[in-house]
Length: 284
Length: 343
Image 1 (spheres, helix red, strand yellow):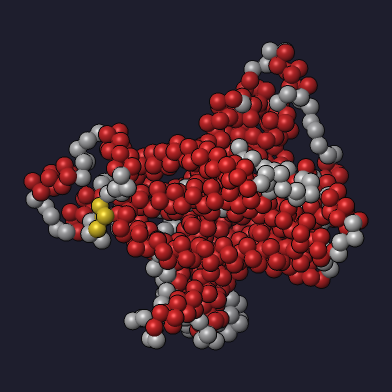
Image 2: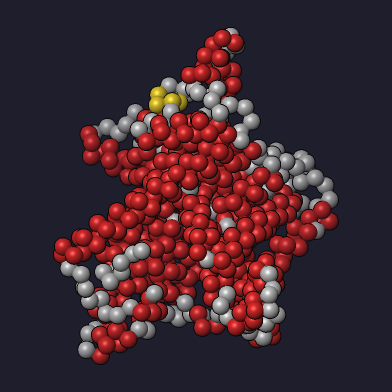
């Protein structure tokens, strides 16, 4: 298999010279570690009542981020919520990437009416108002984690499909592909083991941005009270705190800041990867 | 592509441009038919997957248990037919603008949506207007002062609003501007009982209620347009015709406004079209935060009461709004760049 693109060390060098991307990657690492080791830091159930209700952040050194209306530790809920939020984001992005790459690769490689149908389908999913579609799917099929992940994946695949298709269109008539074809290699093998590895880098960058979008989606679904009732994601924490904004607005503010920082970091990392992949497009 | 742009010379004039616009309109309308059909089929099938029919909920709510009545209702609502027959009947009814009947509001679905539509359209239009004006202005400023403090400030603000969940931003603004400062109302579309002092006071009252929801929904898109506008301005500014204009002795501001801005707007317009559905969907969440009496509230109510005819109707009408907005965007695109005959 032939590979195009930058040598790896050059790519890493470009990425690490981008200050924003580096900060984003570091913060993202912290959030990820938080998610992985949540039960090590806070072994007790985050939904257990541990103190006085509505303690403001800093009021009691035992609860640095305060407690909610029932007296649950907000810091513990944030750390445990990181796991739910990140997992939903990652899996939803994986669903979107699988659908998008499948559709885009088929459309770009075969062209003609296959391409026409695939692109019309993409247009169709861009026309249906996305969040409304997610809400309807979740309500009809039930508010479980799996359904939410699938629903977000279903509305997020179109940009990935378009990008994969564009990459395939530019690669499918290159010499190395023609060589494989003349050797009698099957279409599936050419797609999967010859073109796809070359088309993948920009697609992966895009799917890192889809993770950010999926986290925002999930937070909106949970905020509206349609999330999985067994999962305390950050969006749900914002929704839970909503009734108390007059007395204790921090209950709402803190999980929102967590969402914002995570999404911000993912965007910074995605932009950094993009710039490192396409050095020509920097400063745009 | 922007790289192939030349100086904005009008190539089509008057009647020729009108004819081209009409051709575009006709082609777009024809393309919209299979798209709408797809929307209807997908959503209809989705709703068929729901466990139990809305009839069960309806009879339970109204405490109807008589088997004969239930059978009659099943027949009235056409639930006896096979699914494909129900689909065909639904499509046929849609062609006559019949979206079914909402037992909950006790009125046709189209009427229930129609009542809520103006509030949502108002919110969408004001948010998009805000997003485009802030985005374009901030993008132009950042690109003219590239690599200065201004540029950095604009970029940081854009990053911030691009990452903040709109509903959270809305709540935080309520905390600041309504609860703490008391400047703006917490929610709703007008004062309870209406504002006193005639229609002018009424309009001012609605605008007063509109400020926070517009900011909450619009700032996210303003952030996107800022980033797109900045990069697009920088790209266009490097093209040959801009250098020519400068060489002719035109001032920098004049070149920026008359030559660069107009061409740099094209990507913003493209994105605007693509995002119309997202804006509509985003208004659902914002309407919930601000108790805004729009389609979002109706959808939320219908989704939780499993009032599927209304949900289906909102999906279909929502997609129709998106398609119409896209056609409008294409026409704007053509007006901005007369050389383009959109496929």
